[in-house]
Length: 201
Image (cartoon, rainbow, N blue to C red; front, side):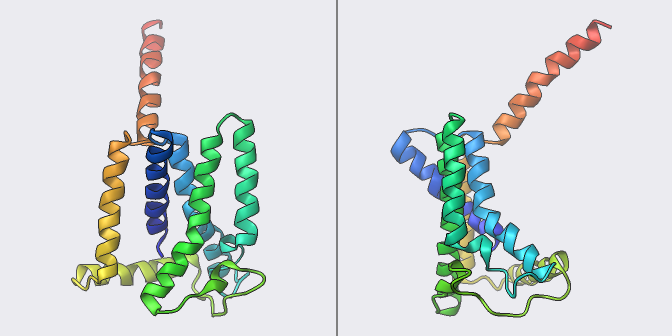
């Protein structure tokens, strides 16, 4: 799955959970945490494999439940101690949904269940990492993906992806555009201070 697909799934799951359990929308920090955590396994494993050749494939420690579960517990403990337990929960939801989403994608796209994607180092994924580096490899894969879209070669899976993206975007707007809202409010608070400082000169 592409990183933005994981971000979509993570945000949808956490936001819907917030509305069902807390009767509330995610805060900006929670939205940031769930999106970051949902892409974190790829941010760890893909560069380590594609750029540095540490792993044979882009599925290793970052996708492993033996890493993600302790990490989620640690982040959750720190967040709770800081008085932000829901931020820790958002991080856990995002990171722990990533490996099952990859398993589902491998089943839908290839008809196989690759449990080894999430069991490093007990099970490892074999393969040959790209030799052109992370950015070149990403550009090649994304170019192929974009070319298929522009050519109108849109599969049922891609239509589902686009539908989930539209749903996530609508829900994000309904939630008050978290993260963007906080950035705009922060910028607005700075403006009066800037104007006041100029008027005092």
